[in-house]
Length: 252
DNA sequence: CACGACCCCTGGATGC
DNA sequence: TGCATCCAGGGGTCGT
Image (tube, rainbow, N blue to C red):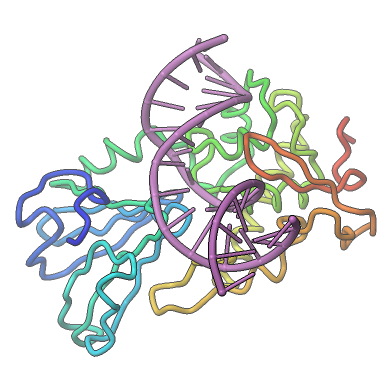
């Protein structure tokens, strides 16, 4: 551990899975859990610029390059290091004695997972909410796993304007959003994710879905469906791009 | 209670 | 070339 402040939880020698003989990984929303066979668990969140990288032993990263935590590993992939680096430090690691305590502390208040979201569950999360549908989609307590890129992409695919009030959406529109979230994320994962700058998979490979974004990052450019210039604004303090004709403000 | 504003941090792009 | 400014994938906290 190079930077203690990126790690939350017990400070003991065995807190971060030291000495574990096997580790499995699971995910909920944007968060990862590494769970040792003896029960110890570490939660990881990459934030905006975080990376979890596998480095073969010979190619250890330079000391300074925002590498905050490294695990030396032996076995399956051969000797090497699992590295957590995060220039902006919006991400982090959280250590727990068990998966159950990790889930209770960090996952219990999250909404349903976005990869498998069903319209009924989404509808329930939107009930009575006057805020913009995009703000609701970004709220991890409503839906776990969607961020600024995929909120815009899914709303475009669903044909729903990002500023529509969440509770004002018709059943068919909520169904369309749930479907759009699932298919957009499935396609993005298939493409290895969106690498705008920092994101890499564990082997250091960039994703390619950024090349297929319909609206994110394309404000002012032509809508690929109708040709109209894409609008750009701020919703929930985040840059938001939409097509005013494919995503009508009044709902259609 | 639900929501928006603000803040955390580094670095790349842009403009002067 | 150098400096200032703006912006970025997230989310916790605080005030309204």
